[in-house]
Length: 72
Image (cartoon, rainbow, N blue to C red):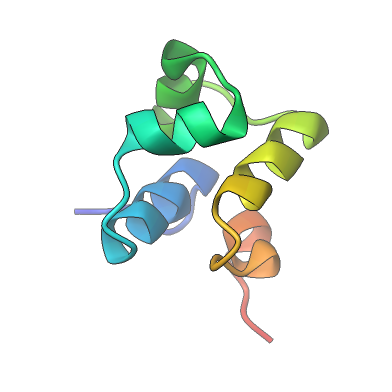
């Protein structure tokens, strides 16, 4: 079950809906795969620059929802 109350859970859900692999998103975001994995699992929160890179790698994802869990 995906936890939508966490950033990592919403990110993982977005990747599932978009049929994206974590390795591909990490590569497009220019991130180390282990660092990206830690964000997905909730062990780390992304810094603002990392958040920007993730959003750029996944332009279809609503930034507000990904960050806060809220929709307009």
